[in-house]
Length: 471
Image (tube, rainbow, N blue to C red; front, side, top):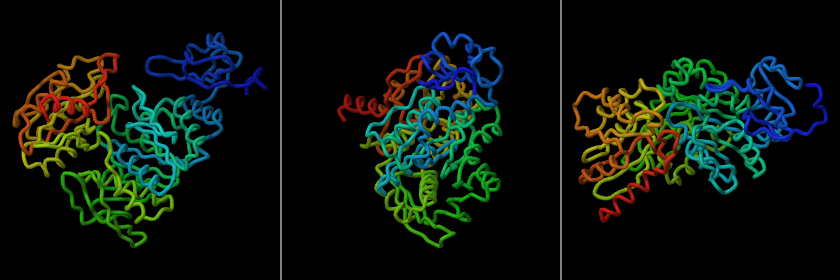
């Protein structure tokens, strides 16, 4: 407690100096570009009642804590009436598959008659009937101040559950605090975000934190980091696999360009049932296993979960067919070498003609993965069209050169800086039975150039180009 603030009404909690109003608590966060502690003494001029800091700021009304990021989440939770105690929180983490798995979980629970909110890359649902778009700059989990406001909306709207994608940055920055998570799922861990974490071990440790917060851990043991997690959290782990020898596994897997079917086996309960999903790819079978295992961990029947998943239409920007005619166009969010390998190898197996991959790499992000992405695309597609993704503050041509440096010249390749023109080129050269994979943007409806977020929806772009071509 701090002297002089007893019986004072708190009107808000924030870590942003621009959001401080009369009666606010200001929490000092040290970020990459700004340290909130430096603004502590001036913040009272804006009406702040209290400063929360990690060291003495010289302010009369201050509280010093060990971790201000964690304290920010705790204060926000209390300010909004501890909303996550009014519903069960579920989390899924991993490099790839978070959005699809979260979408699967939400769909299953909705079909089972439950209200399920969602926080994630492809949109945020607070059970209000309208999706909130993801915030630019924090695409998976928003700032804690926004996140807890959304949690309150979910509670007010009568949510039974909330499924959220737990990104490594959000976990590392304690945006989710130390919430009680009913079930946490792990999909996989491959190279990504090393511009932030530095090493794979740091990346793993950030992901690992969600399993210290959960009651049940659903873990993919086809992944080496998953096997490590299963060992470390063996007392709460439910394992899954597409190759057997797990608590829940898939057998008799069959797939075509438009979907997959398999038998899901629950080894602990000696039960099995058929699952059909409208998405191809072994990794989507893994995502389905994870989702069903997470929902059954809540006490629901596995067969009912499988039936619910069969009614799914698909997931926007995840192996999503946006045009089907003489050739097929698919959009996918694949933006790492591992994701490209999974998407392209899946499509290659079901493509009668050529597989044309249109892709790039994001600016202001991990530069070392760029040549790895070029190599992955060349090894798994028949033709490459290398273009811009979200160049941000970098020269897009420099990014394209870095991607191109990973190729060996074994496949036809065209470099086109403007992504619209690159898509148009791919549509122009596509022939009968070809498949065009537009990779990297997925659900995103914008392109980041400099500081601007310019409208760019690939689904609409393909539709417009094909309309002009008379299709």
